[in-house]
Length: 68
Image (cartoon, rainbow, N blue to C red; front, side, top):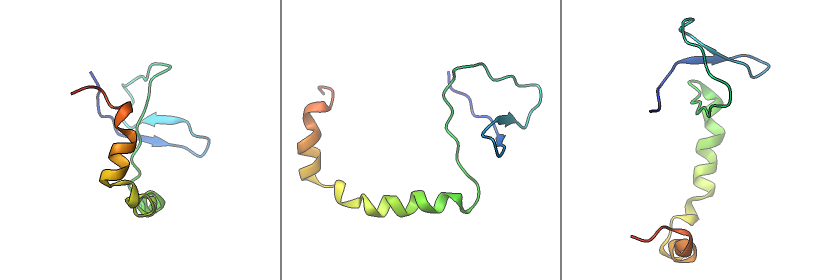
């Protein structure tokens, strides 16, 4: 079951949970959401990919979707 943890990532990319009692196991996936202006480039790329949100794109990729 996924959990949400608040962490800090230092300059070298090492992840430090803010709760010192939490130990992260090796080999786990982590999704990090910046809480500052570092998010701006991601929002810019959303606009650049907006043309992918079309019926034509859905049809082109439909063969990769699981059967409904």
